[in-house]
Image (cartoon, rainbow, N blue to C red; front, top):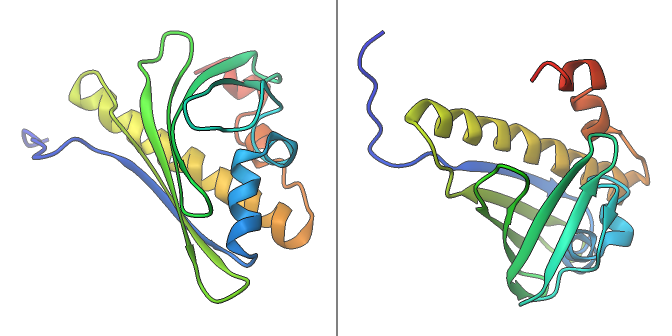
Length: 162
Protein backbone atom coordinates (compact mmCIF):
# COMPACT_ATOMS: atom_id res chain seq x y z
CA UNK A 1 0.00 0.00 0.00
CA UNK A 2 1.25 3.47 -0.84
CA UNK A 3 2.06 5.84 1.99
CA UNK A 4 -1.36 7.42 2.53
CA UNK A 5 -1.37 10.97 3.80
CA UNK A 6 -4.37 13.08 4.70
CA UNK A 7 -4.57 16.81 4.07
CA UNK A 8 -7.39 17.29 6.59
CA UNK A 9 -8.82 15.34 9.49
CA UNK A 10 -11.69 13.01 8.58
CA UNK A 11 -15.17 13.83 9.78
CA UNK A 12 -18.31 11.74 9.93
CA UNK A 13 -21.30 12.96 7.94
CA UNK A 14 -24.73 11.41 7.52
CA UNK A 15 -27.72 13.03 5.82
CA UNK A 16 -31.30 12.02 5.14
CA UNK A 17 -34.60 13.53 4.08
CA UNK A 18 -37.37 12.99 6.65
CA UNK A 19 -40.88 13.64 5.40
CA UNK A 20 -42.14 15.50 8.45
CA UNK A 21 -42.24 19.22 9.38
CA UNK A 22 -38.98 20.68 10.68
CA UNK A 23 -40.41 21.37 14.15
CA UNK A 24 -41.38 17.74 14.61
CA UNK A 25 -38.02 16.43 13.36
CA UNK A 26 -36.06 18.91 15.51
CA UNK A 27 -38.11 17.96 18.58
CA UNK A 28 -37.35 14.28 17.98
CA UNK A 29 -33.66 14.99 18.63
CA UNK A 30 -33.98 17.29 21.65
CA UNK A 31 -36.87 15.52 23.40
CA UNK A 32 -35.81 12.21 24.96
CA UNK A 33 -39.43 10.99 25.07
CA UNK A 34 -39.12 10.71 21.28
CA UNK A 35 -35.38 10.03 20.87
CA UNK A 36 -35.54 6.97 23.15
CA UNK A 37 -37.91 5.39 20.63
CA UNK A 38 -35.17 5.17 17.97
CA UNK A 39 -31.70 5.82 19.46
CA UNK A 40 -30.68 5.64 23.13
CA UNK A 41 -32.79 4.02 25.87
CA UNK A 42 -32.58 6.64 28.66
CA UNK A 43 -31.69 10.29 29.06
CA UNK A 44 -31.29 12.52 32.09
CA UNK A 45 -33.23 15.27 30.30
CA UNK A 46 -33.93 17.20 27.12
CA UNK A 47 -31.24 19.03 25.19
CA UNK A 48 -31.03 22.62 26.45
CA UNK A 49 -28.17 24.98 25.59
CA UNK A 50 -25.60 25.13 28.38
CA UNK A 51 -26.88 21.98 30.07
CA UNK A 52 -25.24 18.61 30.67
CA UNK A 53 -27.19 15.39 30.07
CA UNK A 54 -26.44 11.68 30.03
CA UNK A 55 -27.60 9.31 27.33
CA UNK A 56 -27.75 5.61 28.15
CA UNK A 57 -27.81 2.56 25.91
CA UNK A 58 -28.92 -0.01 28.50
CA UNK A 59 -28.45 -3.01 26.18
CA UNK A 60 -24.73 -2.23 25.93
CA UNK A 61 -24.12 -0.72 29.38
CA UNK A 62 -22.90 2.46 27.67
CA UNK A 63 -23.33 6.01 28.98
CA UNK A 64 -22.46 9.11 26.96
CA UNK A 65 -21.78 12.41 28.69
CA UNK A 66 -23.36 15.17 26.59
CA UNK A 67 -22.59 18.87 26.89
CA UNK A 68 -25.11 20.96 24.95
CA UNK A 69 -23.13 23.75 23.29
CA UNK A 70 -25.86 25.41 21.19
CA UNK A 71 -29.51 25.07 20.27
CA UNK A 72 -31.12 27.10 17.49
CA UNK A 73 -34.80 26.16 17.42
CA UNK A 74 -35.71 24.13 14.36
CA UNK A 75 -32.28 24.84 12.78
CA UNK A 76 -29.28 23.49 14.67
CA UNK A 77 -28.08 21.39 17.60
CA UNK A 78 -24.42 21.34 18.67
CA UNK A 79 -23.16 18.99 21.38
CA UNK A 80 -19.89 17.69 22.68
CA UNK A 81 -20.08 14.05 23.73
CA UNK A 82 -18.00 11.17 24.89
CA UNK A 83 -18.11 8.35 27.36
CA UNK A 84 -15.80 6.02 29.19
CA UNK A 85 -12.35 6.13 27.58
CA UNK A 86 -13.54 8.14 24.56
CA UNK A 87 -12.18 11.60 23.85
CA UNK A 88 -15.17 13.96 23.47
CA UNK A 89 -16.10 14.93 19.92
CA UNK A 90 -18.45 17.54 18.47
CA UNK A 91 -21.74 16.56 16.85
CA UNK A 92 -23.78 19.08 14.87
CA UNK A 93 -27.25 18.56 13.43
CA UNK A 94 -28.53 20.98 10.77
CA UNK A 95 -32.26 20.92 9.97
CA UNK A 96 -33.28 22.36 6.60
CA UNK A 97 -36.99 22.57 5.76
CA UNK A 98 -38.10 21.49 2.31
CA UNK A 99 -41.61 22.87 1.99
CA UNK A 100 -44.07 22.58 4.86
CA UNK A 101 -43.70 18.90 5.71
CA UNK A 102 -40.24 17.69 4.78
CA UNK A 103 -36.89 18.21 6.52
CA UNK A 104 -33.34 17.47 5.38
CA UNK A 105 -31.21 16.47 8.37
CA UNK A 106 -27.44 16.64 8.22
CA UNK A 107 -25.31 15.28 11.08
CA UNK A 108 -21.58 15.96 11.29
CA UNK A 109 -19.27 14.47 13.92
CA UNK A 110 -15.74 15.87 14.20
CA UNK A 111 -12.74 16.14 16.50
CA UNK A 112 -11.60 12.52 16.48
CA UNK A 113 -8.21 11.86 18.12
CA UNK A 114 -5.56 9.18 17.75
CA UNK A 115 -3.34 7.83 15.02
CA UNK A 116 -4.35 8.37 11.39
CA UNK A 117 -5.76 4.85 11.22
CA UNK A 118 -7.71 5.34 14.46
CA UNK A 119 -9.18 8.66 13.33
CA UNK A 120 -10.29 7.21 9.99
CA UNK A 121 -11.85 4.19 11.76
CA UNK A 122 -13.69 6.46 14.21
CA UNK A 123 -15.04 8.65 11.40
CA UNK A 124 -16.23 5.63 9.41
CA UNK A 125 -17.87 4.07 12.50
CA UNK A 126 -19.58 7.33 13.37
CA UNK A 127 -20.85 7.86 9.81
CA UNK A 128 -22.46 4.41 9.83
CA UNK A 129 -23.85 4.91 13.31
CA UNK A 130 -25.44 8.27 12.52
CA UNK A 131 -26.90 6.86 9.31
CA UNK A 132 -28.62 4.20 11.41
CA UNK A 133 -29.88 6.89 13.80
CA UNK A 134 -31.32 8.92 10.91
CA UNK A 135 -32.94 5.83 9.39
CA UNK A 136 -34.47 5.00 12.76
CA UNK A 137 -35.75 8.57 13.16
CA UNK A 138 -37.23 8.50 9.65
CA UNK A 139 -39.09 5.23 10.30
CA UNK A 140 -40.38 6.49 13.67
CA UNK A 141 -41.48 9.91 12.44
CA UNK A 142 -42.86 8.94 9.04
CA UNK A 143 -44.41 5.54 9.83
CA UNK A 144 -44.48 5.22 13.65
CA UNK A 145 -42.20 2.18 13.36
CA UNK A 146 -39.26 1.11 15.50
CA UNK A 147 -36.73 -0.52 13.19
CA UNK A 148 -34.44 -1.51 16.13
CA UNK A 149 -31.47 -0.46 13.99
CA UNK A 150 -29.34 0.53 16.98
CA UNK A 151 -29.98 -2.72 18.87
CA UNK A 152 -29.73 -4.90 15.75
CA UNK A 153 -26.72 -3.04 14.35
CA UNK A 154 -24.61 -4.33 17.23
CA UNK A 155 -26.06 -7.63 18.50
CA UNK A 156 -24.61 -8.77 21.86
CA UNK A 157 -22.44 -11.52 20.38
CA UNK A 158 -20.93 -9.06 17.92
CA UNK A 159 -20.54 -6.29 20.52
CA UNK A 160 -18.52 -8.64 22.75
CA UNK A 161 -15.91 -9.12 20.00
CA UNK A 162 -15.26 -5.43 19.32
